[in-house]
Image 1 (cartoon, rainbow, N blue to C red):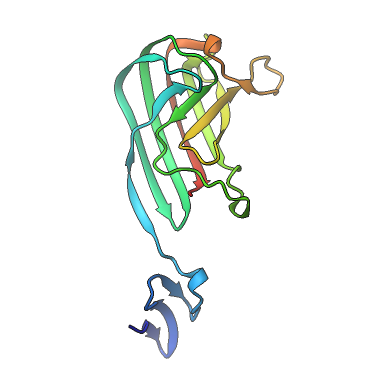
Image 2 (image 1 turned 45 degrees about the vertical axis):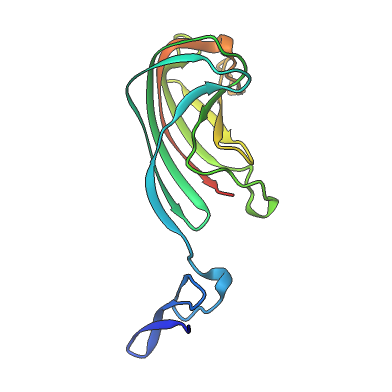
Amino acid sequence: NGPIRFDTNGTERMRLLGGGGLTFNGDTATANALDDYEEGTWTPVVNRITSAPTISYASNRYGAYTKIGNMVFATFDVTFDSTSGGSGSAILSGLPFTVSDSNDTFAGYSVLQVRAAGGVAAGSSGQQLKGFAQRNAAYIYLQYDSSGSGGFDSAAAADWGSSGRFTGYIMYTAA
């Protein structure tokens, strides 16, 4: 099957390629074709990297995402009432897609904004966290400024409060 073109006054605006994908403004290159778009929800899970804690979640634990090509923009809001046990660095798992492991897509780089109301570092209500999406995995490492000097550390199990709320967003390249 050949392509289907959509023109305006003789100028091509959009093309559906015979092999799949959508191109714009006269571009016919398969490599430039938009070949995936998806919206959906995901369930964020407060976790630790070495062993999972026991967690009681409050009513809100919600995530939404939009995937355009291989780029994922995901939002999350998760509240937990209690946590105990577990060990290792703090993570937020359950991302809707595995993070790419390709150097070509700068997979190790992600844009993340998290706001904590408790949760990491007792008494840290409203503290800004940072983190990154782990390559070839479906979770976010969480870090915080333990000294107040701008030097971020892993949020280890000992730094966790017994309850808290994380809200934020992340943008990353999917595998």
